Length: 269
Image (cartoon, rainbow, N blue to C red):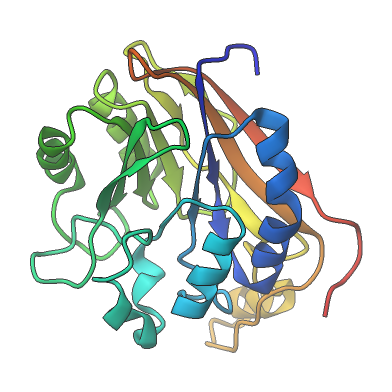
């Protein structure tokens, strides 16, 4: 990291299935030591079998040293998770779902050195199911957490929507991190107002795959157009994400570093 503040936050890109959880368990402690991480966030919406998350899986990830879990549109895939969304403060779903939907998309937490970190989870609308405006919901939430260092997970399909969110929140948050596409982008930067930005933090899971799913099934779907079973891939596990360095006094970022680390080569079954 070229620049270093007094607070280092690790954002782990979308954790996909068993291989993603294996990569978190095996690689997260070393990354936290290497970068002096004070706070860790991970997107978990595909952590259970590649689609959705369960309470057991969420608890497993939190036990690995993750402080907060964010999610996205797949948070609803495992129906048994829904009843727990109101009671699990460390698990967020996009806040811009309509009123009355279980769970929350914003929380304020404390680091080990007693700094306040606000985490906001938003979902885009372009090429996705339309829900409430993430830009206006971000404005509303920032009015409520003005005294915290704020990290935003914008879970969206369109790069333009994520980039627009970065510029829109620059000067008001410490970081805007994109998730959802499972492909890490190379556009990490600190915007002029002090917000660290990346369009997508990438995927934590099997890279011998098509975004975490066995490649043969995906290729067959493209060739035939016929729906078929999607199984999670099982080889070449890696952890992807970004480390954001923040000056706690100004609540602005001074650096952002992409990370991608492999487990040992070979299959795991």
